[in-house]
Image (cartoon, rainbow, N blue to C red; front, side, top):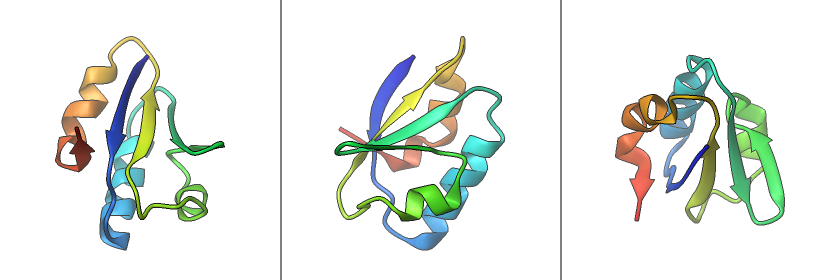
Length: 76
């Protein structure tokens, strides 16, 4: 599993992130505070406080493949 933080600033970015997660074979979760949602769910992401960076948890054998696709959303 790989854990990193992302910042999604606009609806278009959220939609693109969900599309990228949906195209990834393994599970991707987003954690904001005590809430955890499936990153492949647009509705799930919209329930989170996205005004701040959120944590993503990329599961599977090759999480770096997904991280390389969403690298423009990564924050330190």
